[in-house]
Amino acid sequence: MPTLHHLALLPECRFARLICKEYGIDLHLVEEPVWERREAFLALNPAGEVPVFVDDEGAVVVGAAALMEYLEETRGPAEGETRLMPTRPAERAEVRRLVGWAQRKIAADVSTWIVTEKALKRMMPEKLGGGAPDSAALRAARANWKWHLSYLDHLLDMRNWVAGDRITHADFAIAAELSALDYLGEIAWPEGGPTRDWYARMKSRPSFRPVLADIVRGIKPPAHYADPDF
Amino acid sequence: MPTLHHLALLPECRFARLICKEYGIDLHLVEEPVWERREAFLALNPAGEVPVFVDDEGAVVVGAAALMEYLEETRGPAEGETRLMPTRPAERAEVRRLVGWAQRKIAADVSTWIVTEKALKRMMPEKLGGGAPDSAALRAARANWKWHLSYLDHLLDMRNWVAGDRITHADFAIAAELSALDYLGEIAWPEGGPTRDWYARMKSRPSFRPVLADIVRGIKPPAHYADPDF
Image 1: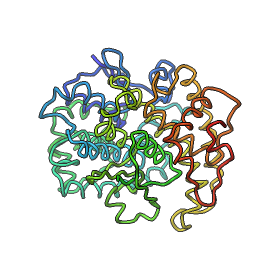
Image 2: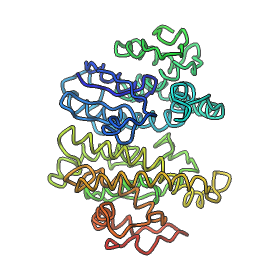
Image 3: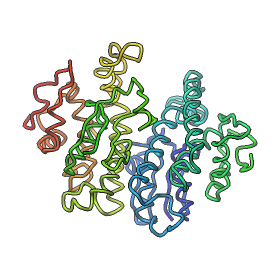
Image 4: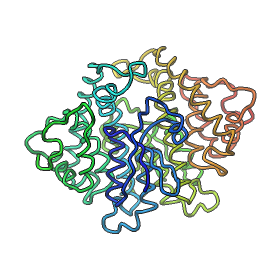
């Protein structure tokens, strides 16, 4: 069984878990407190970041975007109709643009801040950066989130799934970001709207169940969090 | 001829230019002052970032990592021995890890700060963020650079090229970062050492010539910058 070194609330780790599950891969999950900079983990990934996937043959894949490509190369062709990557290069570029948007825009501007300030800093010892949330960082992240959500609404007004007519890796990359923000009570869901409808469809997929069932010690998600009919 | 929307000093744009040239693709280069947030450019890439590659058939590829994959899919097989991507999935994952390291570690911790503070802020109008460099940001970036350079030395002590025995996209991703820092006089080259030897080999490739010939208005690179025998 492949191993995934991860942190439960980090969106990029959730993205990795979701696409593995979609492709029928069960994972041995190992929580990695990256702030401890453990030597054994740095040997796997000198950048000291999660997720890191280790396949049964020992292949090491660092980062969810690289994992997406690795899954396509090693398991993709067997997936047929349910494959999460289109076959045309221009359409594949659109999937990668949106995965990049999740990681470089939503994560860098919003979710990494929120998850770090509200969750990770509670887990870290004070001398390694732990402590109370920085309210200025949270305010900035929340302001950024409004912009990104409006772009997502705009996309989903035009498209059935974020990259087009079919569900792709990009849907999981973005839904993973939303799920972490939602766990931390950061999403004020409107009554309806394209993003809420799409996210309800994402939450109802079997691959989402284990992610939604995770409880992070000391942090209780809002009541609607794990409910696909929220 | 494909178009590349870019900024000459941004490492990720340099990476895009280098790999295109390696694959024999001539580019129509268009400088994009991203801080102006021009509507026509935001229609191409709503994230408002460069590089953006537009192929002859209109395919839009956002970001150098996505461009690397697109080039592999559309031009890679024809490259044969000179292909910049290995064929085994585990080796491809290692190339992607190092491209990610260039973009998420060197760029995010060092080069984006240096290029923004020393070059882009001179080009931007004051109301859009222009002005004098922030010396605290420069100091932090320079401190980070020492760590990243020591990892690069470590890699190149063991390997002929950054990802292994053969030159790959990862060499160009990392060399692009170094070239931008070097243009701005930020690299104090030691007499010898593995990184300097490797970078001299990178600079002597024909694909590097146009990048090294670029002069950014008002900023003069050090004398050794364009010299492969520095």
